[in-house]
Image (tube, helix red, strand yellow):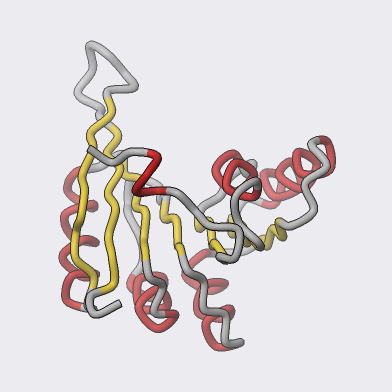
Length: 160
């Protein structure tokens, strides 16, 4: 089971929360990490995330508006090497550009939150081919009496 121990972020670590929405995960992790970057395509959600950070007096988070498939490679090209990347994509999963950027950044851990088993399997297979192995998988039934199940997967970079 993926638990708090496995997901524990250290104060010295940098985190990227891709598909961050209004910042729920990013702001939570900001209490544990040195620096957190949130990436989100919906401009209004980014404004709300920034407002949530201000409201909660959280200053070690920076939110960027734009497509994750473009912003993540830009951050990788700038030399960002986060210790942890959180991927929480829509049902379509992650674009290859985003997954390639994660691999280029050589992040030690990836936390993948998925609402679609098919795209999750596809993306995990791709990341596995780029040197990441699955450590833990935890389904979460957030929508009882429906076929929808969220899945949280913890991956680790091999040889790290």
